[in-house]
Length: 159
Image 1: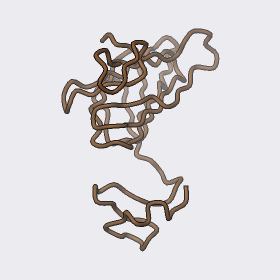
Image 2 (image 1 turned 45 degrees about the horizontal axis):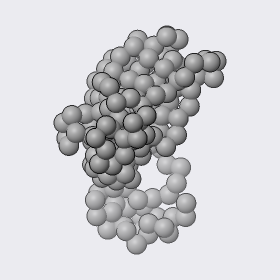
Image 3 (image 1 turned 90 degrees about the vertical axis):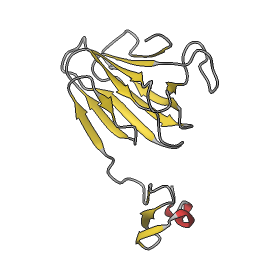
Image 4 (image 1 turned 30 degrees about the horizontal axis):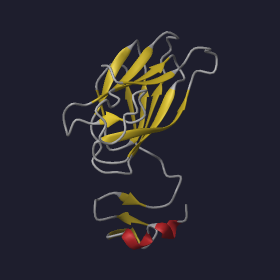
């Protein structure tokens, strides 16, 4: 993406029109910069401000809070050394009660049956989420364990 795409949105400049903050205090700058990364070995609350979450350890559930605004990207990976460990990302019921779109019940915006859990089955499973509102995360990409013949990713309406 060209740098000048967001050039007009820079409110506080760090380095001219190359790098700065927009009116929502979000960093605006060049592509391919390092993203924030968090590591967790036991179920806890994941940072809703975006970045990469590297989950390891045994089967557990992590809570993802509602996004602050639309356009935030969050990547969650199951990096367990245990081949049978399922890591679940569960929607928060605090901070606006968020949900995951794309459940088998067509859980879109305004749905009565939104997705509340994403299961990353086995090491190597990952999901890329993007917020489309301050309440909804959309899975826009996922990958599974390349040695597994079973499904490696699901969005569920049951907690």
